[in-house]
Image (tube, rainbow, N blue to C red; front, side, top):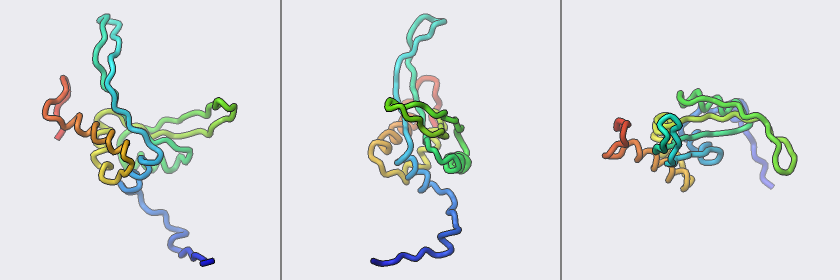
Amino acid sequence: MTETKISDECRSEIRPMSLTYVGSFLDGEGCIVFGKTKKWNATQQKYYPSTTIRMEICNTDFEIVEDIHKFMGIGHIIDIKPRVTAKGTTTKTQKRWQTTHRQTYKALKKLLPYMREKNKRSKAMEVIEYYESEQPQKGLARIK
C-alpha cells in the first residue's frame, strides 16, 4: 500500500474562497427555484401572476456558509432551527445563504461557468434568460 504524505503547506493552508468552490458547493448543497404561479390579492379581490426566483445553499458548517455569503457580497443568512424527522430523530442546526430575484440573477451569472450539475445549470440558465430576454416582463427593466 502506498503511503500518501501531506505537505505542511496543505495541512495549514485554507485556500481562499473562489467562484469555482461556490459553484461546486451550489451543485452539491444548493437549490435554485424558478417558478410562475398566481397569487391572491385580497385588496383587489383577484389573482395576479407572480414569479418566484430564489437560490440557496444550506449546511451545518456555519463558517462555510458565512464565508460564501461574504465572498459573494449579496443575499442574506437565515438560521434554520433543528427539526424532528419522520423517524423521530432531531436534525442539526443549519445556516442558509439565500438570494432572491435580481440577486439570484447576478450570482448565477458569475457561477454558471463553474457549475456542472445538469438540472441546476438548466434552472440557472432559465433565470438568466428571464432577466436578459428581449421582451422584459411588465414592470421589469432589462438587465445588461
